Image 1 (tube, rainbow, N blue to C red):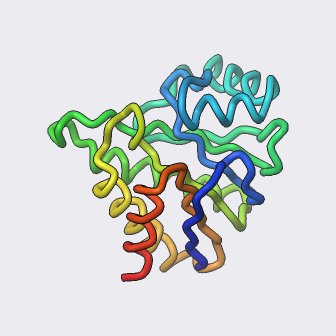
Image 2 (image 1 turned 180 degrees about the vertical axis):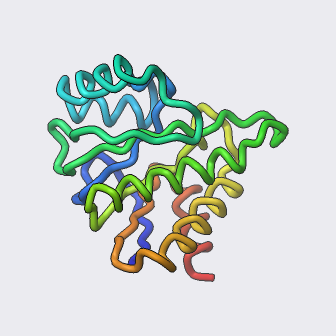
Image 3 (image 1 turned 135 degrees about the vertical axis):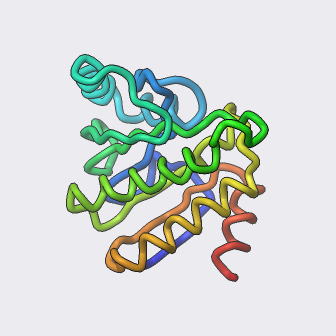
Length: 170
């Protein structure tokens, strides 16, 4: 498995699936979620509405897949990361589930490459170092049984980029 870290805009990544750090409504929001919805256009919002109409909201730690609209990717995998509550509300397990379920959806949909943002580290305030360690460990564990999947961590800020670089070197 190829694991990379890049600093940049996740909406510009040339991969099969882009992961969206979504909120439970799936209808867009701020940060990465808003950027992906803006770049993907109305088709993505419509696909998210269809999922909501069928199943309701997306629960924390779960993931769903849609078309990618105007993005160069084939799919957007929407996952809801946990809001940090001091580590008292099972946040680490929920974040692990968000990554694991996203990876599994990529495999289930024949994706060979996937790009992740730094889930839950923005307005959800998950500590960046803890979130990076969880993300890298889940991906490495997943690689043991899915060696052909290319995973890219796309960091918007220097702090996350440095954290991921250090974790992937060790």
